[in-house]
Length: 160
Image (cartoon, rainbow, N blue to C red; front, side, top):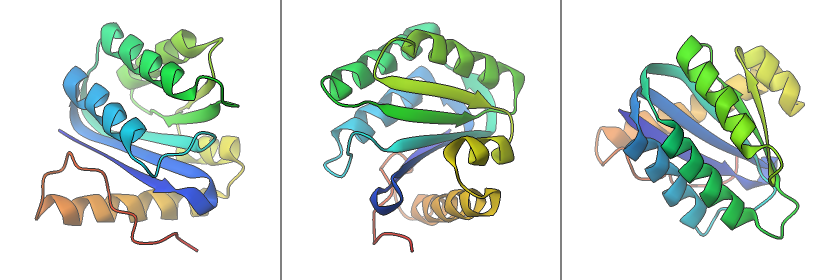
């Protein structure tokens, strides 16, 4: 069970990563920390990476909770775009359900099966998105070896 986020303000991106087993507590907790982080800005494009999820135990109740948190945080703003990479059948289906819940709100959700499709949706080269995701993942792994994995990733500086 591990989740992390990285805010890349200069790129206009927010990367959320989930791996191993993801539960309601893990899923909702990540978004509570993210939306409460002083570095979070409305209008960022989120890339949610579910490629390393082995066991996705997120219920519709948790999806509704996160949708409510995001609607409250984005109220009065121009909204945001969320691109989800979900190659597995269960995460893909739940991501599509989340997109349906978010419909009509400030968050526009699109769900993809591959990194390449997601990169195209974000207007990025696939290699650029792969590099961003790999860098965010490397930081999360190094932090887990010394600190709790539930903490957000530090922002040591903006990537070039």
